[in-house]
Length: 182
Image 1: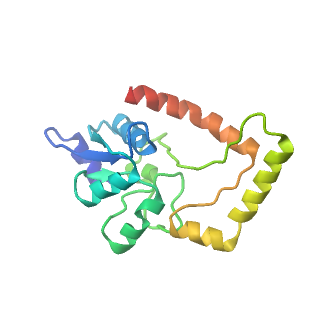
Image 2: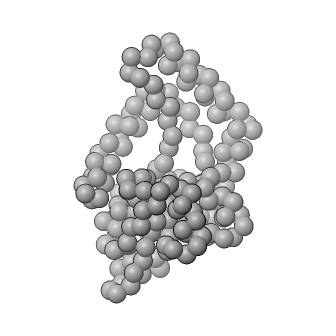
């Protein structure tokens, strides 16, 4: 990862990263990394993760950011090499791969990818609570956790209040990212 950072700062050296599209998490992460490290990586947007994976495997771009499920088969076969995990903790399925923050020692840089289930604001509280309980039950099943682990994903069945707090905490990060991207 350090080599990639140095190449991105070198005059006359062109380093490109692919994203799943303008405004995608891979785009936001790439531009935040540019801003935080002083690199000048060229952003190459694709139309979704499928095209992005074809591009990285075909050598069209130098590196990318993708969710574990998109890369796991290629990581296992050796056609892709992991440089860092973009999360606050290492992935259980990739224990020897550092987090991005560990790899580049960039203070204050955190980036996580998560999926949340959202309902309209007017949804009755008993329905919200029922949905949370049912989803948490499924996500806590050993076979589901094992499958998620294979895909470098971690089940995180938090309740509505915790998810609202995460959304609130993430808002300034993405507002700043929007300014960087312009």
